Image (cartoon, rainbow, N blue to C red; front, side, top):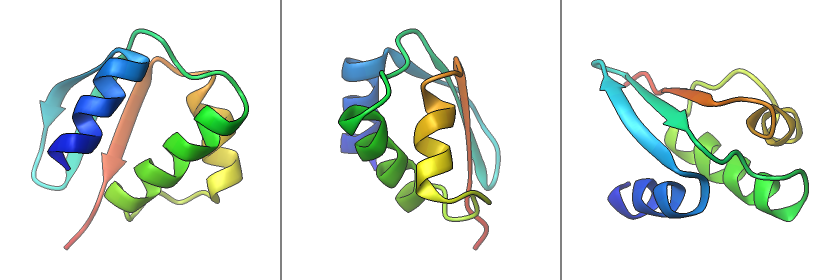
Length: 75
């Protein structure tokens, strides 16, 4: 998890700004461009945020258009 967060910080300027019991919130300075980078990121986010309620392709599109990410994973 720490390695993924560090990679997101380097590649997208993602900063962890809040942490609740089952949710992480990031602010993103440089969202990825549509394509392989967004697809790779979407798969990583789905792995960490197991309760994301969208297919990976939709998440890959969403991360290119957002400056905030909310990851939720219920136990």
